[in-house]
Amino acid sequence: MIHQRKCPVETLIHVLGGKWKPMILWHLIESNKRFNDLEKLIPDVSQKIFSQHLRDLEREGIVDRTVYPTIPPKVEYSISEYGKKLIPVAEVMCAWGENHNKRKYKESAS
Amino acid sequence: MIHQRKCPVETLIHVLGGKWKPMILWHLIESNKRFNDLEKLIPDVSQKIFSQHLRDLEREGIVDRTVYPTIPPKVEYSISEYGKKLIPVAEVMCAWGENHNKRKYKESAS
DNA sequence: TAATGCACTTACTTAAATGTAAGGGGATGA
DNA sequence: TCATCCCCTTACATTTAAGTAAGTGCATTA
Image (tube, chains in turn purple, red, cyan, blue):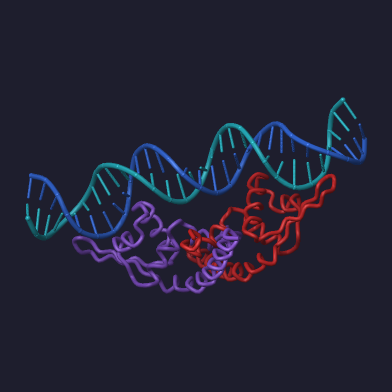
């Protein structure tokens, strides 16, 4: 019930709004990745925040987490079918953001 | 130069990411508003954060601020022409967010 | 003289997000 | 026996965002 009340734009911002979430998704869209792979691709993020963001995205249904019970363990992250619905949204956001960055660049250059 | 490096999705999230910014924009899209009007429409926000968000949105070029030098002063806020470009983006975000809220609702109901 | 209206700002406090450093568990290789 | 690999978690510290309360300035009204 409470969910219904919430501004949908805020919902999206909340889901994507972690400091590293867009970048995580960006890499996962390219291909499935293991925890370590992602760490190497985004070296500036701490493990703690990393797994927290990953768990957030999993809880929202955006990413799938597959555990292979081998020793040492292997855990693979991927965009879920539901998560793929976010891609076109991200593209629209991205297009606006690119234009805005350019605009700011021109502004500061003039 | 630095701007160019930044992830465009993060740029957008930064611009819209203040706690009250989507709601402010929502009200301004409907019609131009004065500071006090907005305060009444969004009663939970403190004046400080309010003027801060407004200044942020102004700095990004999303809203225009028009001062009428009367006594007492009158200041009107409105969506700028540039800011109107955000509307379709917000609509896409909104549609996704609505669907996501529904999905979560169903989930918690089951 | 004091109070009111408008659009803020300033100084201070609290809450939320992120970062740092270290540990854990279980098999395998040196 | 000790270190290594992988995927985390926990306790603690720092940074960033938001909230609270009070004050500013000028003219008009009471």
